[in-house]
Amino acid sequence: MKNIYLNVYKSNLANLRKAKKSVENNDVISIPTETVYGLAGNAYSEISVKKIFKLKKRPKYNPLILHYVSLNKLREDAELNIPFIKLYKSLCPGPITFILNKKKKSKISKTANSRKKTIAIRFPKHKVARSLLKIINFPLAAPSANIFSKLSPTSAWDVVDEFNGKVKIILDGGPCKIGLESTILDLTTRPTILRQGSITKKKIEKILKKKVFLKKKITQIKSPGQLSFHYSPGIPLLINKKLPKKNGAFITFGKQYKNKKNYFNLSQKGNLNEAANNLYKIMRKIKKLKYQSINVCSIPNEGIGCAINDRLKKASFK
Ligand code: TXA
Ligand code: MG
Image 1: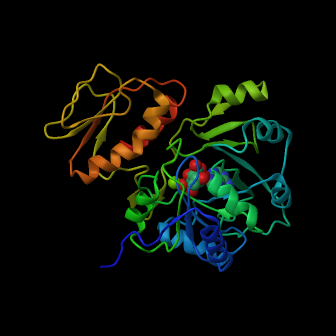
Image 2: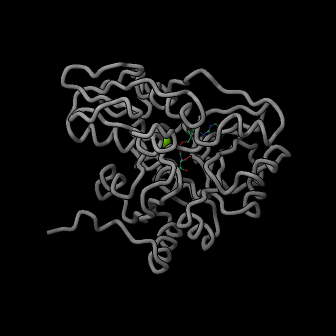
């Protein structure tokens, strides 16, 4: 019988070399990062980048994040500014993505950043992602390794589930430590958070010693004739609820909630980091169990709780 997990590789040196060869041949692989798993390819190669868009079924106008291991390579591609250097020094490598102006002479594929003047870049902290980036000669374009508008994967097995053999090498780096996508900060204008994550507005303000803005409006990405769902578990989801719907699943938080068959606690001890780490895992589990709806209790809107609420709001968007 065919081993369905054949494409999952232990992250040892031999397999890192295999992965290196693969991305050098313009193929697309999956890599672990501390936030979520990514679908990675050579950011300088139009061929690789087009493969990523195709696999993900991602609209061409939605640019990818570029992953670097150090400033050396980034200097060729982006205009660095003072706030960036400050944040880089205290937060990188780590779960934060910066929007910077792209250099004219940069070799980044035009498709990767949807022909914009800016690029999104980040320095992942995960050992495996860093080890691979160190032995290749280009940045990796890597969006989250999920089909467009679906839940981001937080383990190698989630990537297997999502792509069903279409991604030939999935480097297994264990479950993601954070489990929610990176914070995105636009530094081409007054510092503005475009997507919330585990690095909070407060933390960034403390480092920059100035006010950071939060882009409130949810940009609804439209494809011809239909609205797309973001971070969607694929079934109706309602937030700030006290009880589940009849026969529905209930996502809870804290010790006040009992253990019932259809109750899924993000963190019994009321820890928001643990809750963030469990969010996508629990949504996937609920879907696999074939529940037809999800109600979610209210989650404290502080620290990483803001990012959890942001994802839940988007998942509940109709
Ligand atoms: O944690 C993460 O950031 C993960 C891991 C794999 O690194 N990656 C990730 O990538 O979440 P993705 O492609 O799923 O989300 C990238 C987001 C998109 O919402 C995209 O619109 C935005 O970054 N983005 C990319 N380039 C941009 C740009 N030049 N200006 C504004 N937003 C940009
Ligand atoms: Mg994504």
